[in-house]
Amino acid sequence: MASRYHQRASRGQRALRGGVAAPEREFRLWPPQVTFDARPLAARARGVGASLTPAALWRSHRLFTIAACVSVIPRVIAALGFKPALLIQDSFSYMKQSVQLLPLSELRPAGYPLVLHLLQPFHSLLLVTTLQHLMGIALGVIIYAVLRWRGLPAWGATLAAVPTLFDSRQIWLESSILPDTLFTLVLMIAVAILVVWPRPAIWQAVIVGLLVSWASVIRGNGAPVFVVILAGPLVGLALLWRIQQVGSWIVSGTLAAAFAFGVVNHFVLDSPDHVRAIAQQVRPAFTATALLLALTEAAGATLALRLARETPVRP
Image (cartoon, rainbow, N blue to C red):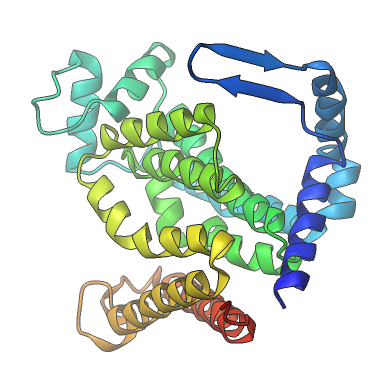
């Protein structure tokens, strides 16, 4: 099972890299020395460009391409229905800080207001929400690309990305003047780097550190939640590279816990997130996305459990 998994992962990596060898490089921290052979970069860039043409996307990633294009429709409807944007009390705080650039000691961190300040010359909240809609689709692209890189088939990677592409709550956040979409995208890029390169180079680790640091000032109370929720899967994925059985058990356990929490929170306990507490007009979409997310978590826990059971224990 392990050998088949690594063979599938190798095929996925070759498919995404276009079969072009990585540039040769050497690095020494002290005394400082960096050597880099940039000759393969042009060939690699051509390979990546060729893999992103419409014909190549339709040939190799047809299912996800269809899903991503269809996900544009509810985002266009949201943009037309919520003009200029969805505004709550927090939205006005962020917009006020984007104009005055208040210091970090204020209630709202300055990461998201700074982005709004950069977009201020355009005088368009629709531009802000449009960029956030593109960020939401980018989240789905990252999920799909990472899972294909790790060897998952196209249908499996697309299934994992569908909740992000079509979740009504996700689209609501993208339509709002709130930092959640940007915060999620920044952390998702950091996680993707660590998943694709489990033993990152120094420059990759620096990028991850900068992204996490930026995330901490985008949404101040979001970083602790991120650590708590993703600590288990991240540890499991890291161990999966070296100690496959232990990593598989950790991933399976954390996904099973996430599945149980989602089912209890949305369908059992009488909470604000219960499907009966959701407004009637959006309840069907909310219920569908909650069920789809639960099925995805259950499938991930089952696959990780199967991998853990089939992996022989090393002496």
